[in-house]
Length: 293
Image (tube, rainbow, N blue to C red; front, top):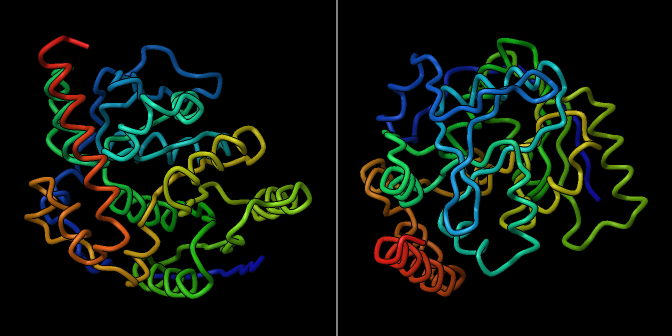
């Protein structure tokens, strides 16, 4: 296992991200059906809405950022995930996966089709999705300002090195208290205990997990209550912020065509996933519109 611990300082982010998302930066958190009762740690996580068995929060960037930062300051052992079409269509047919993600404190709508479905079936009124890479950079900026340690878990040593370097440049004062690339196999019990201890000993308030779906969600579930920080499953955000992969242009992101951009970049790896998951999502949406379930 490769482990790397780094302490950093940083500057303004170069915005390859959708410029339209920046308008939410200054908005106060919008409570889209927020739960009336806070959890035992005093965090009022958003209400969940059922999408084909997956419980999704109709949340905004501003709301998610405020809640996660509040939890990070208290070292709350919470889990935040970002679910796109792939995760949504996995849930109805994979009970073990569904049961795990439905315990998460916040499951954000990362894909535009998921946002559209929440607006269609629950009148959520969401103007934008809650994209993992965008929330990650917002949280890193806030962490730099509020002295919250961050930890990166996943990917490869090369990607982690580039990620740490770029985020150091982009977020002045950011404290990266650890970064490690796990082996491409299940951890032994001893390795798992060591990982948990390293993360807790680092003092991190936020742990960003970039293992891909569904592996990152399984990891976060298994370590909830063990890792004393907010775990955030952010998917391909490590590769994007490291400069290892390109993000789709803003106009494609807004129109829900990010999958097409990624498919063009990696057709051999992604064609089967997108063909099956997109078709399944269209089926599930159509069935619900016709049958109400």
